Image (cartoon, rainbow, N blue to C red; front, side, top):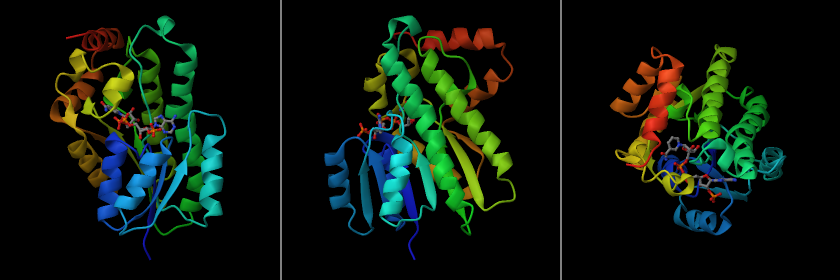
Length: 254
Ligand SMILES: NC(=O)c1ccc[n+]([C@@H]2O[C@H](COP(=O)([O-])OP(=O)(O)OC[C@H]3O[C@@H](n4cnc5c(N)ncnc54)[C@H](OP(=O)(O)O)[C@@H]3O)[C@@H](O)[C@H]2O)c1
């Protein structure tokens, strides 16, 4: 029997790359995002597998529970959960819209946490199950000019690494993908396309493939790209005040 993966943020960028990878390997798909039309087009395109679409704005309270209930209504069991949906915003904290920043926390943190909670209970009863949480190289240091975004991604990494230990010896693996700048819609949504950090953005296909491979190897954390790995490693040794200054520098226009 085919296994099923639920992917949030499946309509573009890394999420869509994951759709292609899982569909090519015969996984049935449950897609979650806001753009229903785009998800219908994806369903049309991948007729080799069963595709269920759940249009949902995950920045709304209770949305994760609604997704879980919708999945149960379809009588689907999830074998792999990919918590990928997320966005960032560039600007000084006090100058950015507080509602947008709160939506970011809801999407990047609350929805990811609650989806993990609801699906983990049934995953633990399976022979084998996997979770892929998409964090960022932003997880490793404070990020002036994207203060809330960096903090949300620090949460994702910390939360996921804690689960790895809680679930050690169980049948569920948790992998955290930490990409650096990657060519997706993220750049235009966050308004970071013209910043120094985006001058060497990686291809979304390459980043997703590395995450996909790490997921099936059951790796704890995967940082994509040599420079990104070095940066994350260096952040462990620099005082956080220096790391914050570097993050502020790369967040400025080229
Ligand atoms: N690209 C980078 O440079 C980069 C670097 C590090 C980490 N990341 C992380 O990678 C993940 C994927 O982002 P991406 O780069 O692929 O960006 P993207 O191309 O903008 O894709 C974001 C996806 O999230 C969905 N989404 C956004 N808001 C949503 C909401 N409120 N409810 C439900 N779905 C929502 C979008 O679909 P709809 O618009 O249809 O809702 C879209 O499918 C994010 O967690 C991001 O933080 C990206």
